[in-house]
Amino acid sequence: MVRHLSLVFCVSFILACTFLSKCDAGDDNPKLHIVYMGSLPKTPYSPSSHHLSMMQQVFVENDSTNFLIHSYKRSFNGFAAMLTNHQKEKISQMEGVVSVFPSKNLQLHTTRSWDFLGLSKSVKRNRAIESDVVIGVLDTGVWPESDSFKDEGFGPVPKNWKGSCVGGKNFTCNNKIIGARYYIEDTARDLNGHGSHTASTAAGNYVHRASLFGLAKGTARGGVPFARIAAYKVCGGLGLCDSSAILKFLPRKF
Image 1 (cartoon, one colour):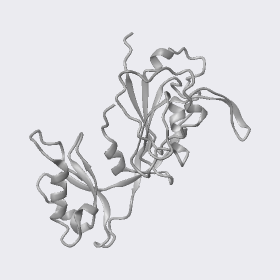
Image 2 (image 1 turned 180 degrees about the horizontal axis):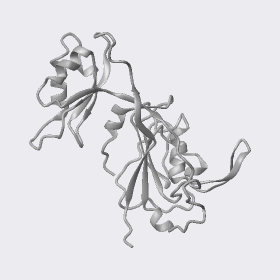
Image 3 (image 1 turned 135 degrees about the vertical axis):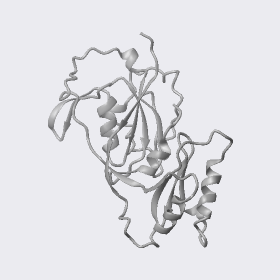
Image 4 (image 1 turned 90 degrees about the horizontal axis):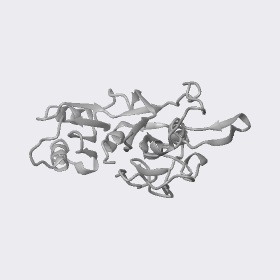
């Protein structure tokens, strides 16, 4: 079997959510919107300059740079900006704009156990192949000191891994957590607990004698316990995932 680096994204949110705020608020109340402009042009093109130019056309008195939140320039053309209803309508009529819609908050949800899915501890595993798998987790970050993420027994980072560890404040990677980035706050460290939970559910080490205050004692483990983890913080401490931050993540080079 040919060994190769696999990348699996564990997205621990559902695409069913509520808007940041209702769209019937006053016209003078800016809200975060995503301006989708389709595919990137194949000719030489500066997305950031173009997006800023569009913003300047609808901001007469204020500096538009303070309202341009993200400029998307990897897999598609578009940007996220704070816009009033009037500004939204003006931009939606501009050439090249496909749609303008509110950025959403996505509510976190938890996962089921692997035993419930029939993947017991007795499943035959190939550690050498599993250790070449990298699971990307888009969530509230990860707590690197957890027993689920220790790198004891793990070899070097897979040679084909092209990602980076940019975990920010008070965050260090190891040979288990090999990648990290944050798109909100100033660290990829999990201050909520949900990201650590989902990351350990996907690829946590075997942790024996685990329990919740003495209840449900047993062995905690992930579905692929010998896989590596790349943690991307796109969700905040209140369990809300900003879709504009998620789009800023996609697609990274790994």
